[in-house]
Image (cartoon, rainbow, N blue to C red):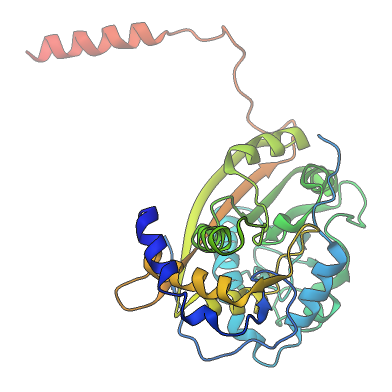
Length: 350
């Protein structure tokens, strides 16, 4: 949709927004109202110094609030989906892990898809006490520990496997957190994680920016900053991991409208906790954002998509038993020689 089309949508809202200018809460911020429950949703798969970007105390309160919702289970769909995909990557490794750690594991979204034949014992940590209280039962013997993901309370060389799903994007010092994960792993231990990437919720971001710029003459950040996939491999390497694997997977969820998107983000405990967040939006700005969202990204059935870019990472702690690349200059055959062999075989066939 071009800028002229966006302008027409905004002009069409002038009469609606002439009502008394109330204020409603911004998406991804701390709300006081309770989420609704009548929306239809469908999933379709497809070291530097520390920075103080996020208010960790605010994040703890948001997760505690979301954990005690009576209908909180209906907001677990994204964590369950990503948790199952992380578990799939665990099964790809043909070994049994005597002791594993799930960082920010919440309600056992990963462990729910594992069994004790793969993980014999599990430590589950989270910043939210209420989330740990509502964890799901598992056949894996599990010990819950209330701990901040930024400060792991474990000794060096403790775990054979460390897992993390949809929690590292709220870490202030991501390089430091990865170094701590590397430290608590045993040699030849593996870290398997998933976090949201930089293209997450681009539909929501764009709609809010266009609406706020037109209505208020500028825009503020309403969606948390995320890590780019191009940076993730470098961060893992700097933390000391080797044999790295990084891949991307998009998960798209369809909602009736923008308000349902924001309601579900709040119910997931994924509200914005950045220090520079703007907690409120004007009512007419929100109405404009809803109209732009539908016009630019809406589906034929009237629903709107929200895209979550999921970055998956696997890194191993070095050990002498691991395969190592050959030294430079040790090759005995050049690619040029391979080309000659190919030409000779084609000549004989002719």
